[in-house]
Length: 330
Picture 1: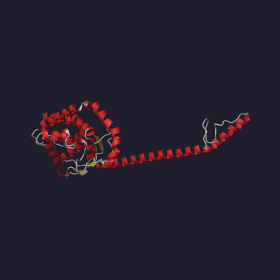
Picture 2: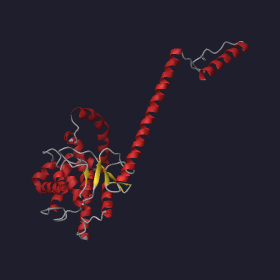
Picture 3: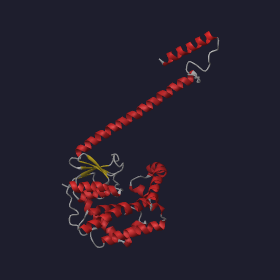
Picture 4: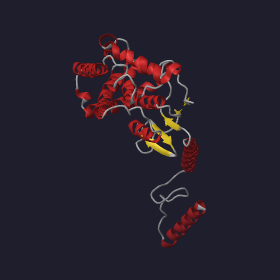
């Protein structure tokens, strides 16, 4: 239709020009518009390009629609499953090393094991809709994001009594210790992992050989600058190496002194705060043996290393470190 209309317009233009005794405008051709003249070859190329662009756009739309459909079906399935057990969205297992390299994900999983709460770990699902991060959980058809909020929700819904014997003063101490762990001590771990021990981290998560070569460049170009900016904004990234080591030493010393000769942080019985502290200290044991974390926990504060081993055994037993994705305490 377009070609017929162009031919008709061209014929009318030539006829009008002839009647007025003026030469026709050469810039108007059979495959062009005012000011643009295309040869048959150029017009053919333009048509093919348009077809390819249209096909690519259609394919992209189709892929998005398929993904959206699968996500909707998965969400529907998880909502139904979450009526009986928690669907925990976390990260993949690190074979023969640790159940998770994410302290928030590990603390939530440890808490559910201590409280005997059944769950299934989903390692390939999306980030949470609300906070765009992991871990998060689907429980009773509802998405709950942030590990601390998840623990609070599960404590209420399952009537968890891990902290029932603590006095108000002990509860306040446990709360302060939890905040120190999650909002302060976590950043030295992140900083050391990405800027001093990256090769070891890649080994732990199973990124070696050609995978490492393929992923390292985009990781260095896009991920590390964002982490560096985050740490700088928090203040920790502005310290030099000596200052950072003093902060790490002070924090580990505080953990060691609070623990003392007790089995757990608040006494001889495990409490909720142990899930938080253990998840952080266990990550420290994943660093190289010559790291400041590993050295301090094995030589100066051995009670912390013993604590990590004790918590591993209590929470996971024979399942450590290759815990199954489904946990059923029955």
